Amino acid sequence: MPCPIQLASKLSGLSQHVIRIWERRYSALSPSRTGTNRRMYCDEAVKRLKLLKMLTENGHRIGGVARLSTEELEQLAQGTVPVARPVPVIPADPTAPSSADDRVPQVPAMEPAHYVESAIEAAKRYDCEGLRKMLLQARLQYGQRGMLHQVLCPLIVKIGSNWQHGEMRASHEHIATAVIRELLLTPVPGSQTPAHAPELVVATPAGELHELGALIVAASARDLGWYVTYLGPNLPVEEIAACALARHVTAVALSVVYPENCPVIVEKLRRMREMLPPSMRFIVGGRASESYRASLPNENIQWVHCLHGLDEALCKNQL
Image 1 (cartoon, rainbow, N blue to C red):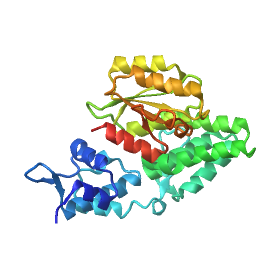
Image 2 (image 1 turned 30 degrees about the horizontal axis):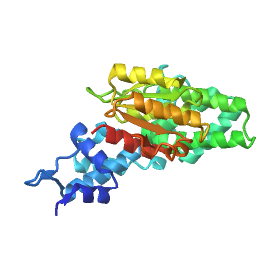
Image 3 (image 1 turned 120 degrees about the horizontal axis):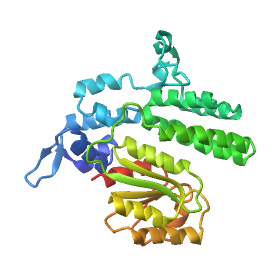
Image 4 (image 1 turned 90 degrees about the horizontal axis):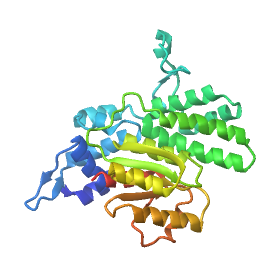
């Protein structure tokens, strides 16, 4: 029996925002309509939503699977458990010609935790190429979104924890940061920005030198179909606003990692919101963002505290 989008969202585990975007942007399904133009989803549609959720969580781009038949989605889903798939060895230079041996699956797929531990060990050895190769292999196995969610974010958290507890040197942290930065700034091979994509400006405010959070925002937004203008870290909010206004962007995203509960940053965030038109979304995330929510309760700001929350905010902004 057909059900409304609220129930389809509950049954599939997808937000209503994501469902609408997948329909409008990717033609993933075509629900029927009532006399009052309400979407109604049959059992087949809910099944498709569940399959699409499973596939995208395991690294498939929605644009690549949205128009497959339900039967094709089922067949593809049967092979999407990451640990069950072999992964080919990636050369240190992925642009170099690969031999026939390089294209043969040689390395068994690994759990995300194994990638994280291996990356930590590579950083401790100052092995830039080994760390880079490990992250590229994780991206090949899990896809961009899976790598961001399951490998890269846990890796960044563990690096910070290890550094704070004296288990990694500052130079280890810098090596890891440099390699991760390079990976996140490099477009995923074959990725394309959709025509008429919404635009997002990403930066960190002046005094905020931690860049990885902003880079993850930029990479995640690109993977969700946004055009991203990345301004980098440590920039006055007046300059960020000038860029956003000149380009007439859909949204601005700032990453705030350190310090927490700083009145100077509170004022910067308030000033940023004042300089942007009310219709332009303003997203604030990062480890310290929750400490500022209470100080700015009446501002038109979207607060996100994790990558899943960021995905939800970005999907909402696409409507």
